[in-house]
Length: 354
Ligand code: 13P
Image 1 (cartoon, rainbow, N blue to C red):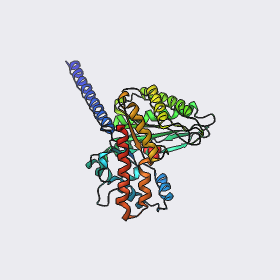
Image 2: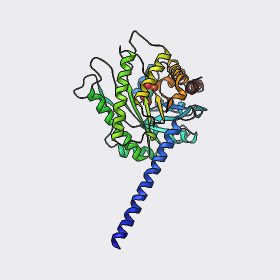
Image 3: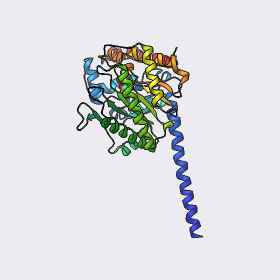
Image 4: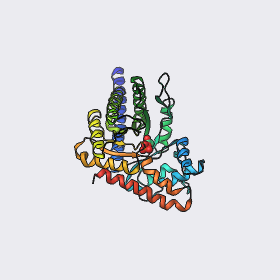
């Protein structure tokens, strides 16, 4: 009898646990799908303090906590942003900030029908004994940080690994270490009910050809998905954010928009499992127009032929024109917001592939 009671208790316990796990999985699937549905995409505004300051400095705008807050407020409060943008990636400083009216940014976005998310890696640093290569840090204490961010309203997270192409690089060690960190981060996110945006980025800087970018992208993506499998990450509840397949910025041969679209989708088809809801491309230093044109070509040629949505998660390609117009001045806010809205809309149309 006692044994039977223990068994029942145990069964109940297991049943409960299974139920709550599948509830989390269901929530992850729903959030991931919502992030890539209706032809909308992500606005990345998760620059670290140093990167945001660098961009402000380039425009001659003072680099203070308050100017960063005002810049982020301008973006978050852009009218009709939710018509083109499904989700916004915030940074630790930003998720703790509020609009001038005192509403936390994450709350403001949620109320506007936009899903707030958060960058959780702590940046890429030089990789030991791997000159010219970087490893992304941030796993220490991540479980607790994720719980805190989820409490602030974040429903997804982002972790960026950077891979450079050059003489003898990327090395196997660099690819493996970054892929492993991405997968461990993704598993921790899913445990918390937060959708991981898994971002391996092949950097555009360099003289490498589009074929080299193709080969490295394929290798990196295959390694990342192998690690995600080993860490039991549910592919239906995550988003891949990655680079388009492009020639290096200093490569003398620059392929056409259609060639870039073909190479990009061919590479993804080889390396990205069909269970994934969507791929969100980063802009990576392309001009705003170029990034939209290439996304448009990708969707014109492949929209209904791929198992996943072909979306965007742009920072520079959406923000840059607006920042130039704003110039740190209150009287330019409306015009800057119009420019931001315009870029967001261009990318919505590019997703439709018209
Ligand atoms: P860019 O679109 O500027 O490359 O930024 C993407 C990114 O990784 C920021 O989250």
